[in-house]
Length: 445
Ligand SMILES: Nc1ncnc2c1ncn2[C@@H]1O[C@H](COP(=O)(O)OP(=O)(O)OP(=O)(O)O)[C@@H](O)[C@H]1O
Image (tube, rainbow, N blue to C red; front, side):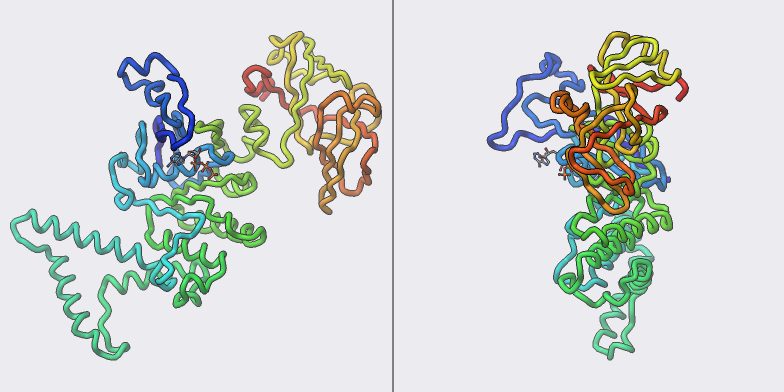
């Protein structure tokens, strides 16, 4: 059982030279009690704030968020490469807070591959394995030291084997004796190489490989160790678009095959949407929502998530709400489906934020319930076409200030300056509270 549990994780760094120091956030700081405010010490840079997340056994969890939101820091805390300011990390049933990285049974794959340049592909993959076997032998020796008999049976057999290996080293290659440990290393390296289709590269040095091949070696090194958990920090960001897509699919397939719990960091929402069983969206050191890709897309919890997931992003239009079901804007008015009635009741006479994804507009005919837009920019991608347009009719659009991104069918010819009328797919609209930015969900959902 290798689920990973992150419990109330906090991380702060002391300010770097030249970075400003904030005022104390709470009087609780002076109380000496270890409260949340205490962990968010005013003179520190609080990078992670109260992270709670459970990654199920065998799950592929993606951490996604804008640059600087704390994704890599969280991964480094799980790996044990950085110390936490507060909280608990469980791997399986072990609390690993105080364990060094090598004892956590976790393998990490980095963006820059982190291969040893002077070692062949074979030795790069074998390196961690050999160290692991060596450390097991050391543990054996320690146990033996603390027992009555000063040497354990397995240590004795390893010593004998090593002696034999040494003696046969001077013999021609075919006649040399290979230790049990080396045979196991060899078996695992070749299995992994076959899995990743890099068997023919085993004798090469990293500098003789392409970026994609290097990344596969880095993956191979992690897989060969057969850890409880894989941590991957933007492993594809140095690859070109085609290779990225290929390797993305390969990682997902491998992870399903191996069933190893995986935490994958990216800032790329396409990667997140296509790879993750679930996605945790982070912003400014906090998790905004954890859900399956489709759940995030269909039911974003707040405006940040709604904007982050989907490309081009969701459009947000401030409208006035009039109970029971009318919304008005200077350029259009719309009666909402019944399902919104009770959820929106309390906003009567107030402003609401209407959210519409670019693909949920339909180019329609002039009508008061339809949105007039003036086309500003046309991007034709062949299979898809997107326009940027100002909300309003010619002569007025310039003043509304509302810009929309709209997907139009590629067969529909649209030119800059065209006036279009858009209707909305009523079941696909979203509303957000203008004060809290939280999503408002209709009753039937
Ligand atoms: N050793 C450190 N000392 C001080 N601040 C740090 C340190 N490491 C990271 N930070 C800060 O912590 C914040 C989060 O950094 P982190 O690398 O975790 O972000 P990220 O979400 O992975 O970003 P990116 O996608 O750009 O890699 C950043 O503001 C960064 O400057």
